[in-house]
Image 1 (cartoon, helix red, strand yellow):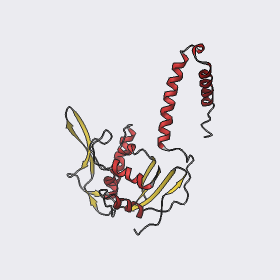
Image 2: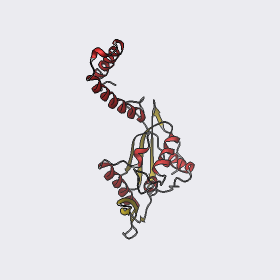
Image 3: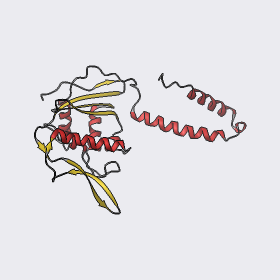
Image 4: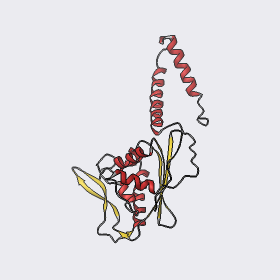
Length: 230
């Protein structure tokens, strides 16, 4: 693939990228989930099944995505959940079985977003969400032609840039709210509900008049919010 002139598209505080990379031809030892004993409990980790017959790179790629899908379907977090700027990320193996489409919506700059991907999802560190220390970017793009790894961040950044294609239309319904804003608002709602429930048990006459008035006004405005018109 030649040098791409495509660049991320931004609307408000939300940006997007779309890239297409060529999947390697030939065969590779498949990925598998294994279990090992650590202390008094078993830990699942991702490794290479050296005893299994080789599979096509595209089928190995499908197995990687299936692992993530199964993990998230159980309600488990993955290293991707720890990248706090992702609105969504999508990988699609195109019908020709020869190309991988990657689309993502995110907050902030493109360079910072890719840096977060590398430092969190491909760090190799064992965390709560990645107990085996699997390098998820290697597991995905390692099946693609020209993938340079992520040890040299600038090379990986150039790899993604070179594979980018121009987005003809990018339309975010809400363009002024970041993922962190959403998380903050969820936490605020939880704490306000707890405060409101506690306030119901307090004698209204014991409240200072100004505080009671401000509280009633805030609650009325919150109750009047129309979530279909935001």
